[in-house]
Image (cartoon, rainbow, N blue to C red; front, side, top):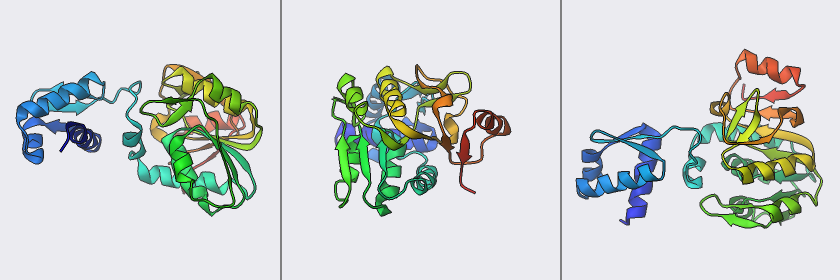
Length: 254
C-alpha cells in the first residue's frame, strides 16, 4: 500500500472515530509504529489531525479545509435528504447554477430524473457526474482548477458566471452566521458564490445543520439575498425566527 493511500485511510478512520492509536494502526496496516507516526506527522502538518500521546485526534477547526473526497463522504444521509428536497424545487427545463460544494454533487445526482435542464457549474465533479445525462445542456464556467477541490475558480470563472441569468441558484457554504451571513474558508470560493447569487432569480442555500453558528474567513454573501434554506434537520427556534424575519422559507426532512 502506498503511503498516500494509507494516510487517506487513516484520515477516513479519524473522521469516523475522532481519534486513532498508533499501535492499532500499525497492526491494521502491517507497518511499523514509526511509519504510522510519520503518517500522523504529515496529517498534522496539513492541519487535518492533532497528535496526542500514543495517537492522534481529528482537527475539528472549522477553518481547516478537508480534502474534497473526504468531505464528500461526510453526512452522506443528510446530504441525500437535502438533495432530494432541493431537486424537488427544480422544474423541467430550468436553467440552474450549481456550485463546487460536495453538497451540490448530491443535488446533481438527485436532479437526474428531470428533463431538459441547463446546468452551469464550476465543479469538475458535477461535470463528470452529469456526463452521461442526455437531453441536458451542461456548461462549464472554466477558470483555474483549484488543486484538491475539483473546482474552477478565479476572475475568468466569475466573468463566465456573470454572462448568464438563471432560474435557480443552488449553493452551499462553509459556515453560516446570523451577523456575518454566508461564509467561506477562501475568498475565491466566496467571490464565485457572490457572482452566482447576483445572476439568478431564486437563490437556494443547501446547508447541513453543523454549519449553523459557525464563522469562516471570507464573507460570500448576505442572507438577505437568499430565498430559501434547505437543511438536514429542523433548525433551532432562534434560527427559524431569523429566517422568518428575512422572509426566507426553510425546508428540512420531516
